[in-house]
Length: 591
Image (tube, rainbow, N blue to C red; front, side):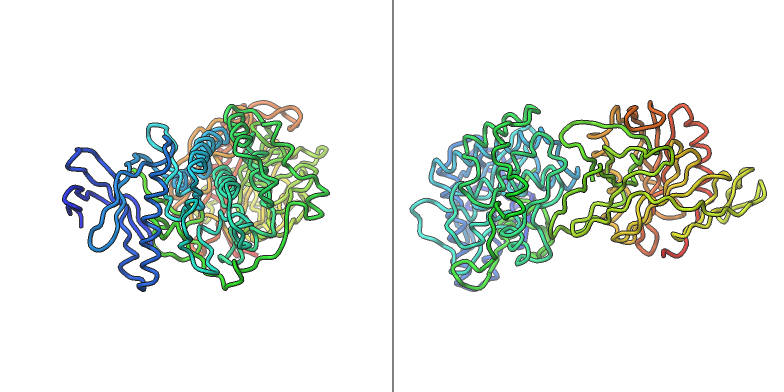
């Protein structure tokens, strides 16, 4: 269809967004000589006549809804036309990508930028609500980020216009279920506060990199929306209380649009909005279910019939299968932290487990997140872990949505090293330095280290992850090995990019020296080197530190991370030693 002239005026150029039910074209208006976007409803070609009627009605309703709103943060609809027996919508072309694509690319969005984005989306919603229009499908895929810095809300395909008769069927839940407000899941009529809930869920996804309520199916996701509290947004900074306020279960307990706009404006300036604190439930409220409860039931008493509207309107790429796009579909576009929150930074050296192969907690337990897919990630940021005495044991905890292992670093008897003659050759062809020993670790790997290094377990095997440390001095100089049989990422490079972002938010004077793809043992790998400053409260030897992390997936899908850290003054020696460690490394049977 490329090059086709539609309605004698709009020439199609290329597809810039597509999904199971529609696609969006870049086109040229040959009358006004401008670039436009045209939404084509392809699903109407393949559904029954009754469903086709509904889809066509929704397309026309989208155009009417958007046309009623006059705001710079709402994508302008230029025209609605008939072609090939179907309606097509001609819209303003936004050169950029969706918030969903931004999150996929970067892992998450910096809190102040997320607040700025949320502020413009809220202004668009206020304009829509003033015009009598509820959006009903606010999600990252429907928030466009222009190359010129603009933020626009699009896809009013399932909007409800005040005074219009409904075009949904009894028992039908319309919208992307990850972002449905609880009252909508219960079958109640939505109001402006329902769009605010969806905005809160969208902002949560932006700063955390995941949807707050997504589960394994639409039904369990809707149940989580009604019954579960969202996990604490640990990367939200000043935006945290705003998100919490917007995600209150009961509509009456959420802030008004005016209050929410003030909160977002303050968060965009890096200030923690004091007014938002009033919306954060107390511990007793949480324990007593004060956040709003109830059980999930079909709307209007009918059976569940869920429309993934992101897919229906230029949304989820490829299949409509649930789980294809955890951020909400892309409409179109030219895409454990430590105990402290916000932008506060803490610096702990590798010896106090501040490495990208550790998940650490403060003395308080990390709050559980009911129903969340278990994060079996090898690395997340350490903010408050500290050396316990001189033994190098630290409080460590793998973030897990269902369970908390709670085990700290368990000091193990030093693994007996097997003496090797100086100059002997390792299995990989490297040379064993004088005074080094072979350590056959119980976790199922072998490495060479100087004689006398002590072994400790910094993470007991939990949810597939096990983490072992070796150090001669209680952790100031450290070699760490993490083995994850159930990794969350498809490759080590994407994993490290996500961690790089987190460390940059948490560590004092953090700086990336290099982060690049490579090959290790004939397998794709990632190599990440960085520096930071350890504070006296966090380290026996405070000051500048340097670390190097090499990670790869073996052919069985197990992720290995081999890491070293040391004071920057000792880095030349540490780096040379680590080269020998990598040469002598040998994986074995994972136990």
